[in-house]
Length: 373
Image (cartoon, rainbow, N blue to C red; front, side, top):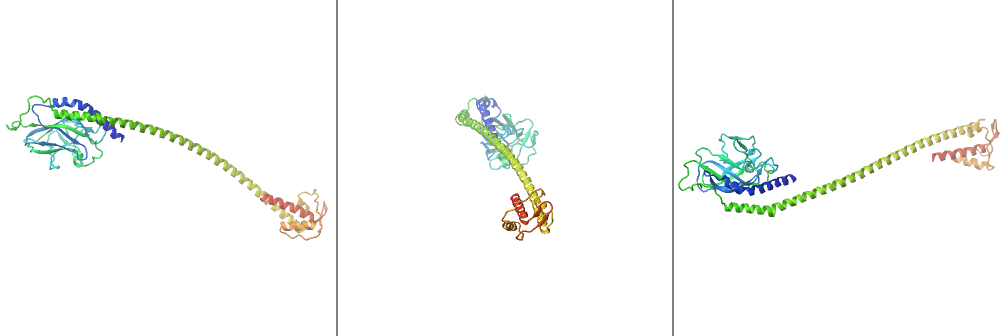
């Protein structure tokens, strides 16, 4: 959209200059030997916007000549594509009879200066002595050629074929049309060309006045509003960019905090895992010790006290209610212990009864359960 606005601005600026100077150029372009066919014909680059001029009688031209008044055409909106008669360095003005669009009578392809470009979708060409950006454009006619009276269409090459014209410069170029008669071809009924330049063309001046008024009332205010809109879009874009940077910084900080938290959680999980490994190892050792004690009890060895207590110098104490303790130990250890007092020989402690062993075994089982929890 900005590209089209820039091209439109270029056209408006050019028109402001050309409209002021067009009256002078209109006078300067009038020459005694050229006869005017139409003072103002306009054609566009797209959307079937061809121009039309009319011959009131048959003529024998040596050449047709077009004098630019205002406006531009072009095969794209960029400044390099915009011109009066074509696209950049190429020419693209085509003339056909009104009812025979396929019959391109101009440009004359037999002109020694004519060269067709390599484009196949539309008729672009070059002429050695002509330029698409010169205000006066001349097309030679074949020798002894007669243009019959009637209407003729002026086409822009791509608009004529409706090929690749959707991106063309959306404007029109306007010009006057003249022809140079073959000597002796003008009859007595044909008006003789004026011998002095035309200095007053009131219709033309009125057209220019209307164009200036249109520029003042519509085009310039519209362009000023577009400039204000562009500034607003720029301000909104800068604001959005600032908000986006702030939000991005917040997200970055949150990600860093989450990474730190995840690292801490991972470290705690590693510590818990190490503690669980230690607890399991301790529980395994306790189970092994219990099995050693049970083995000692069942075998009745003299080392049963030391296997149970782990210290020969300790002297166990026994509850008076030995039978009850024995029953409780039997439930916890899932083993049967005979009631009554069973004497086992021990070298350093004398006699050690089952009650002493049961008390120590009960305490050991309790400690193992705590470790497992």
